[in-house]
Every structure is written in C-alpha cells, then in structure tokens.
Length: 199
Ligand code: AMP
Image (cartoon, rainbow, N blue to C red; front, side):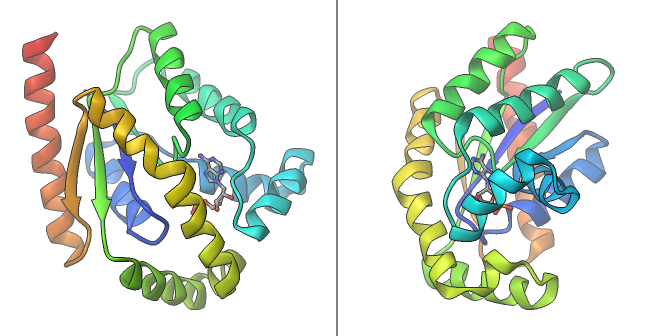
C-alpha cells in the first residue's frame, strides 16, 4: 500500500515524478493543479473562480481543493492500493483536512516525500516548462515569483507539520529524473516496511 504525498516547491519535478511513480505502481495520480486546469478548460463555475487565483499565482481557496481531493479519494477508495497526491496539501489547513478525510475512510498516509532544489533551479525549470507546455502561469516572471512566495509563506509550514508526525522524507530534487525516481521508490519501500511494523 502506498499512500503518499509528493511535496515540494513549484518546478521541483513533483508532477514528472508522480506520473512515473503512479504508472509503475498502477495507482491513481491525484494532482490538484491538473484537476483545476481541467475545470478551467471546461469553463465550469469552479474553473472560472480558480482561474482568477491561478493566473495571479495565488492559491485557490482551501475549501475548493479539499472538496476536489475528497471526491477523488472516495472514487478510488475501493480496489486501488494507494495513491500519490501531487500539489496537495499546500496549506496546513489542507493537511489537517486530509488527515480527517483519510481518518473517515479508515486510512492514513504512509509517507510524505519532499523534493528540494535551489530557487534558481526552480525558476529555470519553470521557464523551460512554460515554453514547452504553454502554461501561462509558467511564462510570466511576476506570476512565478508570486507562486514561490506563496510556497514560502503558506506551503513550507506543511513540511514542518509532517516532520512533526514523523512522515517526512527529504530527497534532493536536482539530478537525473530516473535516479530521483529510483530514490523515491527506495524511500517508499522503507516507509512501507516501517509502516507495517508500526501498524
Ligand atoms: P500546480 O500545477 O500544482 O503548480 O498548480 C497550479 C496552480 O493551481 C497553483 O499555482 C494554484 O493556483 C492552484 N493550486 C493547485 N493545487 C492547489 C492547492 N492544493 N491549493 C491551492 N491552490 C492550488
């Protein structure tokens, strides 16, 4: 069972690593950024509201993303052996809500893997992604700065929250994609063993 949060700043490679990991393990990849972009493209009311925040590099309100994640966790509650959360939780309130949701489903997290990279590297990677994927929030320097600011102010405390719970595993996010993937898998195997021992 792998119930994992992939944690880190914008541009650190969470999405790339989450895709590889969930494909290999055959478990759902739950990315709140991807879910929000689907809403924006579909032109739903939720999408229109979210777009205003996303275009400015601000966080979408907690209640919106918490409800989206709850829907996904319930959808995958039966028959799947875990999940990888990518880009959620981004605030301590979201982390607390996640604990509550999982508690209601009789589940708990196995590990929180934090990927780290220097800010100069994050900015360079986001700029590259903006050119390749045409993500408007990646192309505008002021928006990128705002997102990194939101990370420092609101998301970084989530790391302390999980450290306090003994769930945090920190990995270096610079280097070859495949090598980092291998390190994530090794880390999760260790976490799963420890989890079984403590269960
Ligand atoms: P991402 O693709 O994870 O970089 O997310 C893109 C944008 O979606 C972020 O800059 C936020 O505006 C919004 N977003 C994604 N996930 C969350 C979240 N968990 N809480 C609040 N806003 C989010």
